Image 1 (cartoon, protein in one colour):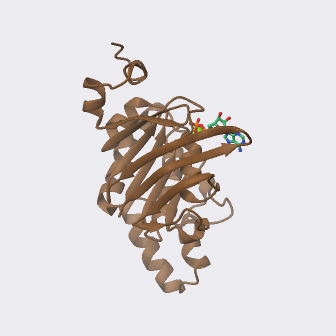
Image 2 (tube, rainbow, N blue to C red):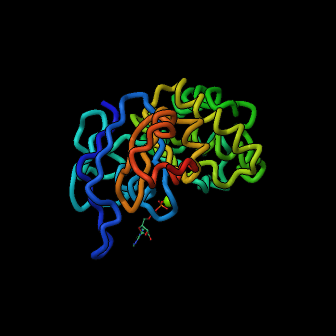
Length: 237
Ligand code: ADP
Ligand code: MG
């Protein structure tokens, strides 16, 4: 169960952007992919979600080899820093869209949307359009839409990057709560070590397409295995 990334390599042309990457994520665990801009975090997420084809290695989700499966057969929910909500639809229609596409009945869609809206605490906003929501509320809607199908895995790429400082702190706690209450296995991509440390069970620190260290925040801070880790966490040896 969970997610296994095995010997993953992804090239753009001749350049390996992800090189022989390994990462094991336990069921219900939330792991941060942390590292500087350009180190390959988003590319890794695109590989797991199936948006990018990979050149080598394997990806397993819930023990199933999905390396060559199209995105819609991977049972993953995805959210980005831009929330990509449909502007002409209400919040309720936005969240229900993935269920409607799947052919679920209107009654079923309404029931599941109501349940998720309660979890992410937007039940009073269901009839609004996205333009009438704050950034934090839009992010909640985006999260709700990502998990309404009850996917095995939630993938988040810099979900807090567009929020102002106060909202960002509030949403750190909220995303963690939602992840824990839903029990979903999650990957959080971020370049912000405070975010990674405060939200996740473990951190996978990346540099140049490789995972340098995977550990709890405390372990990584106290026992960095590599000068890059110490430097990145602001605790140079
Ligand atoms: P991060 O999310 O960690 O900032 P990315 O995964 O977006 O990094 O990018 C990793 C590297 O791959 C960067 O050097 C980037 O320029 C390159 N890259 C990303 N997407 C493409 C693409 N579609 N074509 C060519 N190079 C790309
Ligand atoms: Mg990125």
